[in-house]
Image (tube, rainbow, N blue to C red):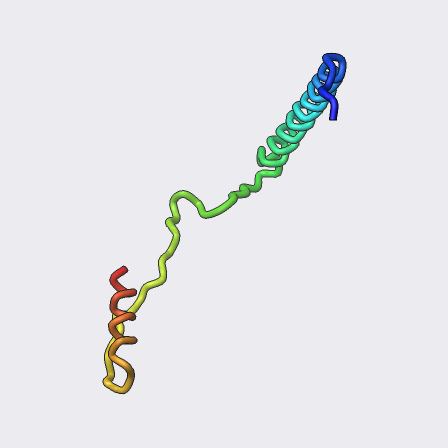
Length: 84
């Protein structure tokens, strides 16, 4: 395979530059569309994810109880998981 000539490199550079300009224009359009849709023009609040004043709820675990009928190692593993 032959080395690219200077003309080939310039053509590739111009192509990349044109592609980059197109992407920048597309991004500007996307940002305008997003800001227009999330501006709340209809008076409705749309939140993505949990609200800041409502922390996520964690599952509350009850401490395991050993009834003597199962393997004690299982009970110890449950206790270990409880404290982790």
